[in-house]
Image (cartoon, rainbow, N blue to C red; front, side):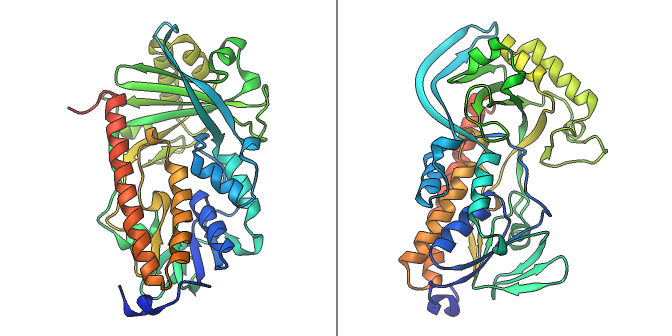
Length: 382
């Protein structure tokens, strides 16, 4: 720890956050509520749109929304009371009581964005570099700013992480997640009945598909106005990753091909696979999806989450496989715990050291848990 950080008080900090998605907004709201002067720089020129569809509304997310008087979580969540596994023919293999709460990326984002001051949220601001020793942030337009604390919440392709930890790269897990969301109005009664109030799965050979209802595009949680979210974990089975991750423009993508950008032959083949190997209700669900998309499954972790005045938070620091259902909740907890550490310690250096130790350990455990869950559920590994 530098002498400056050891002696610097942890209250009334100027904070620059790189990234205005979930992690950045959780952090901005949490630190702003403690009296810190927070500014968010988001590279997108307009409001962000979801590529992820549904998320599990873990308790940490719901608690954050309630604690900061952002929204009653019940208004933007759906619930399931049963976890069900199907056979290949569509019969129920197992069914157990299980209370789960779901929401959508866009429903949470809209509420967080509305809760953060517009005059402190700057779009079209691309961060190109940070200097950890003095908190300098450089932007693509040549501008610079300096803050007491810099928080890199810029996701799995974090600019700050690439600079501070250049030897840390995402590790591809040899399988992908095909995803889609379908408005409830487009679904047959048979499909609606199969998934309503249930968290439903089918586990086949080296693949797993699941589905659950989430709020509609307008945030509606009422029957008829929701969306059905599905995720299909599928090994590549000898198919070329490059083929799948080349979009309609011919561009090669590392992490995802967004809705509407899957090439025709790739999309057609996956729909054919659905008809060949999935239970009928899942086949119908995939067939009804207007714009499916695909994401690479990968693991990412860094050796530490702070370097001098810079914190790496959320997916910028650790990416655990989505089986943990913890990506968004981890970002919320990272933000809450950073605020708590600054409250608890009188010096900035002590606060960051405490937060770094606890959250780095947690992130490493979560990545390891995701690997175990993925290998088990897709029958991978030895």
